[in-house]
Amino acid sequence: MVEKTLSSQLIYDGRAVKLRVDTVKMPSGRETTREIVEHSDCVAIIAIDADDNVLLVSQFRKPVERELLEIPAGGIETGEDPVTTVRRELAEETGYLPQKVERLGGFYSTPGYCTEYLHLYLATDLTPSQLQAEDTENIRLIRVPLGQISSLITSGSICDAKSIAGLLTFLEYHKAHQ
Image (cartoon, rainbow, N blue to C red; front, side, top):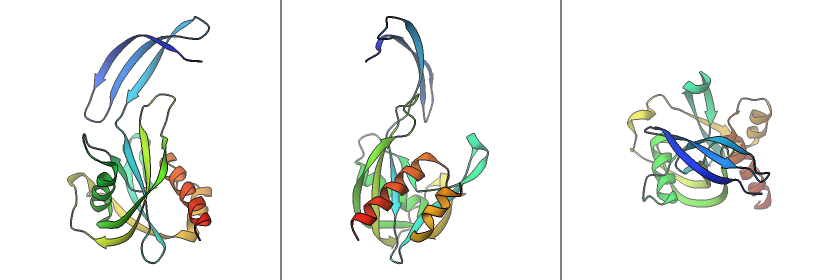
């Protein structure tokens, strides 16, 4: 059951996102519109230190007007390999470089209206790094023991979709590899 795109109009072309409105023909023959946010692919990172702590970041998110506790993540730059992005983003947000990076899978963030796909990676064997980006000055690094992750999710302390999906995927991976 595919919707056929009849036309597409770019409404907004910003630094982080584009917005387009597609006119589509439904399988039933009815025509309607779809508002689509175009966003580049990203990486989401489960970073585990030598003491089995998960490295999370706390930062203010303007769209929801509150500080959120999240896994590190960031956009893949044009021509950049996702593993390179993992290393760059982790260094920028946490001050650590992973010596080992392993792909755990991936997922769409909000496929009802957005094209963004998140590549999920496990980063381990962390070493201190000096690399920091300009826009990360208000990010705080929070180390959480692995055993506390489930309760932070169920209590709502971790409440963004990428962090929940990434952490639950990792917890299953961790169970299978113990």
